[in-house]
Image 1 (cartoon, helix red, strand yellow):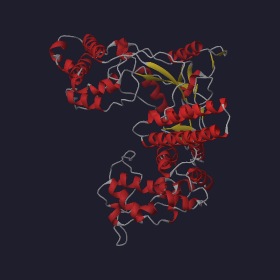
Image 2: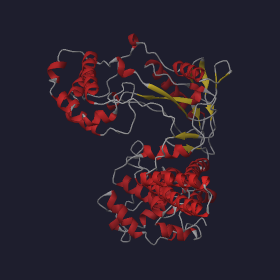
Image 3: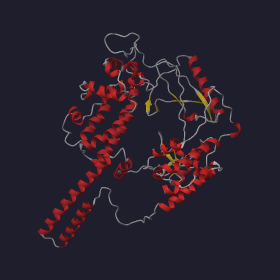
Image 4: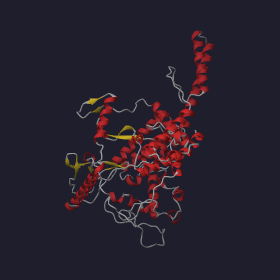
Length: 557
């Protein structure tokens, strides 16, 4: 296929063709090569039992011998035949256990490179399957068939889709004197993107498997670069690029309500190389008096005007208000909805970029949610694998469970003792899954596994984030004001990057990231805070804190 497609003079063949015709020509040549060079076999449904993925030839042979000796004993029930069967039965059981352990160890160690095999094995052990439940239609009636569910979801997704008026698009107001140069998509850029494709993924509606595109990347990058460049210059997308397989994903709330599902589109692999998307919008401000509230309402009105002008309308029913602080007067706010101005509902919890916020800013709701997710995964691992060897437990725990407990901890690090204990209890229970360690104390289990406590990990994540902010690896300034302030004067004691610790009155402020981290950061040696890279900083901090009290002895116990 590489030889055949490389012989085509793509620049000559695609010259003079518009974007749509160029795409059709490329796809036609590609599918002809696929039909000619990739063999196809028909898989017939078999009545035979499907072989388990962990089955090896030695295991199959042992099971055959076991079955054969059993039949011999059934026809001639002598002590000699039973002894022969018993030996064969024990050998078959031994082979099965060995094969299962070997296969499970393989899919665990290769989890990051081949997650598909891991989750397929997990699914085979799961009794319940994830399906779309019965839904309510627009009349409040329950629909049960797949066709009816598809209709309900399609009607809802279509109702919130905006059909733009292309004849009434406003002029974009120039905000800079700088001009965008010629945007050109090069062959090397396309080949690099094709080389990053995940070959384990399924093909899109175009039936072009990522594996094929990956293997042919050196010869198809030229025609694709030409087609992408034509698409940019002509401002045209081929019709087939707009097709997608849509899957409804449940977000939150009542599972019977169609509005609680989001459409996720599986687009064509080639088109996904160049796609963009927009996300949520947030408006925030101080509201200690009526004037402050009116200012926020004016900002919301400006957003409404902008959305109407650019035909990107907000769904007022899904817009929420959350009030923070003891002095907040909790004013009602409104936005333009389908039936005129709508009062925005007040929410007591809202997820933003994976973190659940609440008016108290104690993050107890978020902690409970993280713990529930982690415990579900922990139960799944226990049911699937049972007691684990150390070499199997560590990659599973570090890849699946611990990330649930540590994502964005610099934002929501728990304040209350009960929340700190909730998080640590997950790791405490998880370490009991390791063979031979369940009778040890939690601290000794951590030492044996080389796992630090979650409390220590949060402390380490805090100072690492400060390092990234001070060295401008992460940008956190708000209108020119940084959340961290360096001391103006340099003291003899300490390093040259000490932070100023402001006075705080409330515990919420005291335990926020920008305050709680200052003592730990200021106490570090100069060599660590002036490390030349993030990886060097991690190495130095691990060495410096190797005997830290909370590393294996969390303070919550």
